Length: 168
Image (tube, rainbow, N blue to C red):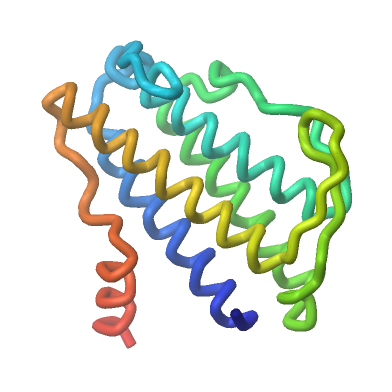
């Protein structure tokens, strides 16, 4: 994996984020917090989980110890979720730039949320972060369909590549 590949993954992650948030912004505030019986109860709780996980990984990239997962109610509405997730994107891009191209194969040591020592290579950490987000965006898509709301535009990786090629 190259530094450019990592940027491409991060670009995909936030492109897909925008698509899911565009779809979520069309539901009502009640639908946003409605319990749906999923891994995380509601669309809001799932969005909050994705953001919280990204915050944890960014904190680890900074060499700091995360304090735990933020509570879903810190994102009371879609506007707050979009603001938080956009802030996270800026921080992620800042960390990737700070670490630089030579860091792609760098092993980063940290403690997981249970206090266990862990170490992972940067490209694997970022690949995990993007894959984690993909999994939960799929859950949000399912919850939207269960509410008879319009799902997001395709968030498939190949759709991202095709769109980029058209713009190039």
